[in-house]
Length: 153
Image (cartoon, rainbow, N blue to C red; front, top):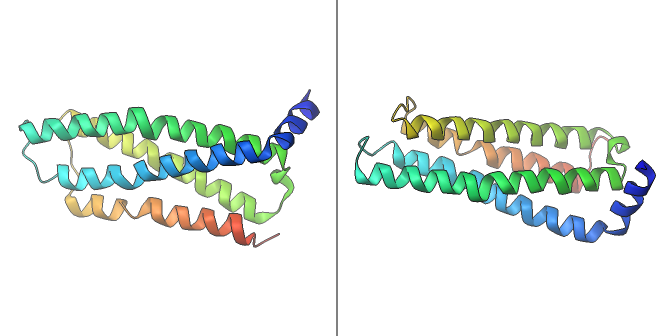
């Protein structure tokens, strides 16, 4: 059964790769934008019309773009990894995979912080969210360098 799946993933490699790249771009766009929304949201008075608008924007961005894009990224990425036997590709793959796990964890923190904003219980500063806005960039750079340079083979 597993061999049939691997063969299927290999046959549709470029379709899977294209869908994976589209998913990654969508996920990363949201991961760059949501912390930036939090930066601006910290400047607003709780309960104000603007704050309520930001809550809605953050909720929709997470629910309709970031969450589905992350799930699709994982789905197509795992299919590619099994189809190309990446699990035996060397250290570069495990560094990349670890960075994706950390990025997924950061995604979880973004969700947690959104819920805090929804309850008007945000405890973080504008400066905090400015720093957090850089986390996806650093992780993306690690992931891209590992995929294309493939060090530690």
